Length: 123
Image 1 (cartoon, rainbow, N blue to C red):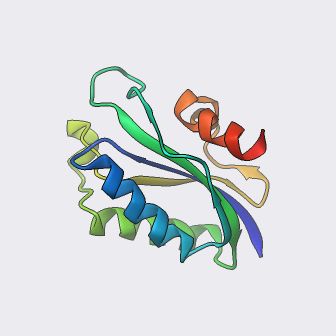
Image 2: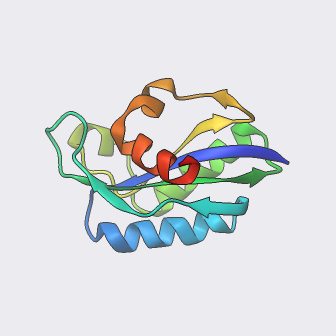
């Protein structure tokens, strides 16, 4: 089993319900899942609506590519489209930030929207 740290966010529609659904789904995908609180942060560029965010940590038997495909498939099933990046309206965003101790998204790791949840889990 491999340790994975994942970032979740939503800034569209009923953010609270979207986050609850994403957390429930992810809890079924990664083992021994732990989640930070869900909290609100401004969208980092300041051009789009605020996000609800959460950080998750757990164990997976999936390789990074397979897990990432699963996350992206979930995003699509939750309403994310290729236009989401252009419009800044993101129903659900789920990204692997760290996999097996390797930082895959160093920029995200440094952003406050991730750091808040990470600090909750790693106090």
